[in-house]
Amino acid sequence: MKRSIFEEDHLLFRHSFREFVAREITPFHAQWEKEGMVPRELWRNAGKNGFLSMNVPEEYGGAGVRDFRYNMIVGEELARAGASGPAFTLQTDIVTPYFLCFANHDQKQRWLRPIAAGECITAIAMTEPNAGSDLANIQTTAVKDGDHYVLNGAKTFITNGILNDLVIVAARTNRAARAHDRLSLLVVERGMTGYERGRKLQKIGMHAQDTAELFFHDVRVPCENLLGEEGKGFRYLMQQLPQERLSIAFSAQAGAEAAFEWTLDYCRQRKAFGRPIGSFQNSRFKLAEMKTEIAINRVFIDRCVMEHNSGLLTAEDACMAKWWTTDMQKRVVDTCVQLHGGYGYMQEYPIAKAFIDTRVATIYGGTNEIMKEVIGRGLGIETDRETNESG
Image: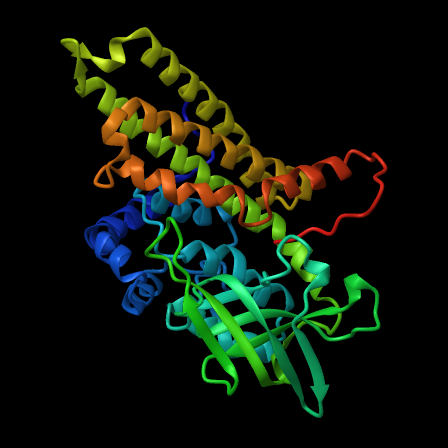
């Protein structure tokens, strides 16, 4: 089924970014996997070519393009190439919108230009050792002291944890307020005294993407680094989560499509008992099932992106997209490994890397169990207790 959501400018952008991936990322990604990190120069090159934070207004150094289809193209092409290291979608789809929506003019002038240029790498720190899906119970604190906040706490599983120059930190600024009014967002900058990066975490997959623990020991954060209003952090997080989840969904969709194409090609070439393994009925049925599920889900994801462009995407729809697509990707990749046989377990085959890289997609951005909870609450059915949602 032919996709119809893209126009000529989108196709040109895809062509340019695909060439960038082939030239700047694919030849080096295996080495970055060993090193556990991508080089900062890659970020600068991406910014120089207009592939980061495209929706930053021109007055702040961006392209001023408010069209999520461009974000989608970046996520799809990285997934298509199996390039799990460069966290471009984190910066463009997840972090930058916080500055666009909640930063004041001076903050935008200060931070958006280097972000769009790839000179400033960003992160967002919500998850804590004892607070993942329950954001309202974050324990990191920020106590006001004159014209500063004194920040104390720890965060974990932070993407760009080592590379980041700016990190948006969710912290409790009011212990007395009700749970959803306690949080505020503070922007912590590289070099602030007491801001320490912990160990680079050893994940089972996505080895080229630096994920780390962050520690804050009496970090004096200027009040001018408060993002938005004090006490509204939880609301801000909830407002931005649908876009984050849609970004995860379209990357997972593209990842499933790539895994299927690799496997279809393998089934055409690999022979058993003197004929291609794709000619066996079981293989054909498995391929047919995956093809159908991928095609049906593609229509839904494309519709979600267009709804998001129109400002009509609901939190429930975003949760459906994230849950269903990442679960579908997991099923598809697992089936593809099985069809590859023993070679599917060999790391030199892209399907093996996809198997370990994609497993986390049902966990980050809010676990898929939380996605179902949000969808269920949207049905208007009373529950025994309110469940707090997370990112």
